[in-house]
Amino acid sequence: MNHTERKNEIIEASITLFCERGLDLTSMQDIANAAGISKATLYFYFDSKAALIQEVHQHCYQMDVDACNFGMEQEKTAMDKLCRRFRNIISYSMSHPRESMIEQLYTASPVYCGMPLQCKKEFYADIEKIVLEGKENGEFKESPSWLLTTAYYGFACQIYLKLKEEPSLWNEDTFNACTKMLRGMFLKA
Image (cartoon, rainbow, N blue to C red):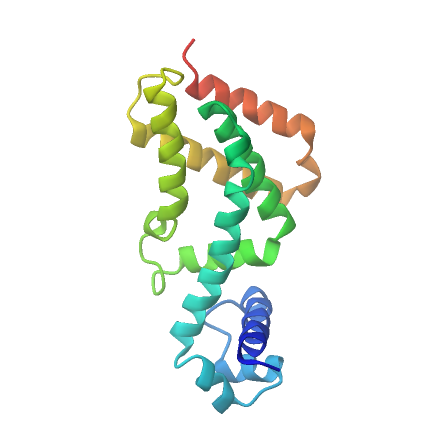
């Protein structure tokens, strides 16, 4: 097994254990055991638990960023981009519950994240870019960009949390109702 494959195995074992036990209650020995390696080998790949947690988070975060941006270039209007992004966010989160949980654990941790919006700055920046586009082309309401961006981000997060509790609610009718609400929040009358 090459270096990259072994590292990926460690990351996958870590994701599983962190989701089961949390970041603080999972030891490096637990991860080494789950990955089928010695603790010394684990420290060859990651010099500390904090470094491992950071890499696991970055792995999950990048998957999420890539999924959220999928197909965005096909959309013509800023509103269509926000709606596509919303579908992508929810669909990714529902189909990758472990990776989504890692992001939640990391973001909620004052030890590893500290400021949740800073941990999601790329998401926030991507949304703000679309909001600015919508405002510049006259498509969106004249509200502060930070307010529209935060409203969108908060809306998507809360919908995801509800759907996490009741996954059966995620269907085309729900998506259409959500996009209708988004259009009402953003589009000029």
